Length: 470
Image 1 (cartoon, rainbow, N blue to C red):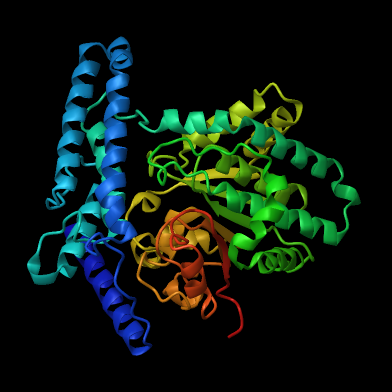
Image 2: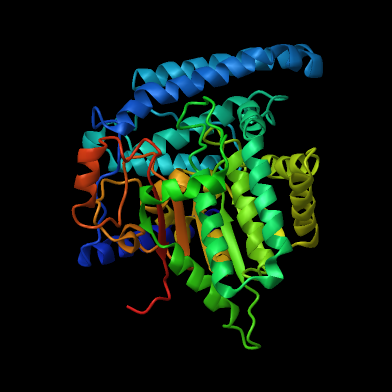
């Protein structure tokens, strides 16, 4: 067993060394990671202000539920709540005072991977300084905080299955009811008229729903530190006004890639598969489900695989429970077209047209260019896709390594070899990393709106295809 593990480690190190040498030779070494060590940066402000606020809200959520823990688990539940709060209060203090990051001790399935990654970060530290909250990569320490929240629960059964973010996700869904009704009504009207649609109408409606899914990403509870961020207005009606805020728009290429996939099979029709790597629950998830429904109903996809998180993550990220709950709530809605949509979605899941998948890699701090080595099974799975849609800001940060790229660096280059299949990032900007812009575009934006990279006002639809001719 040990020899097998050791030989695996040696192979991984050799592969990394080979990749490093290859990238160095090709001039593709990545720039520095975004980090709170750059005082005044968005990463610094996030670690200093937003992360402690989120931890405080988690502590408050546990405290407010103490009576429920007692009712369900008795004195054991009360003690677990107190111990978890003490753990998280200590974590908050360590964060605020830039203490060293500590190894996980909960013996979960991913604990070894986390601790191995911490050692990797330690090897990169200057002068042998310990890995710490304000000196290490922002992507790593932010992911680490959410994993430590989970450790507080893992270490204190019977609370280990409790979702500390569930209340906010539920509230976001219910506060977006008007927008959801409007969107489901629009979807059902499209499906009713689908047979009479021309190819141009089909394309136009696909582009609309792709943009609805894009702008659904504004409803992110981690960026608002858990404050209400729901969608109130009709998403379709908002699209014309939002068009000018899309900085890169590869939507037409996404359409043509999907359309081309229909005729690439030996019989003229291919079993086209679309993978959607989800971001937020609530309204954004509904926009993703509506888009997925349209893809199947229009014959653009035969199979949709949704990828979500295996543990509560980044305040509002989708778990399997959120996915199933959203479909059931939509089915149960006292609204004809919402209910009809929910019934159809439940049917898609039951017959296997839709499926939900999680993998521990999505809740590790790794850049996606590590996936082929660190999660070869997931990478291989994604290679079977005809199109992967990556939703949201965290996925974009992981796609690009969350680094200080020049804004004009091509999207393909920032992926650093991560190209399992044709992929598209749908993202509203809420972190200070953005690539693939035209020369002068970022400078113009900075003069007009200094916070353009972080205020969620702007968006991109960026496409990459590993099969594209060079």
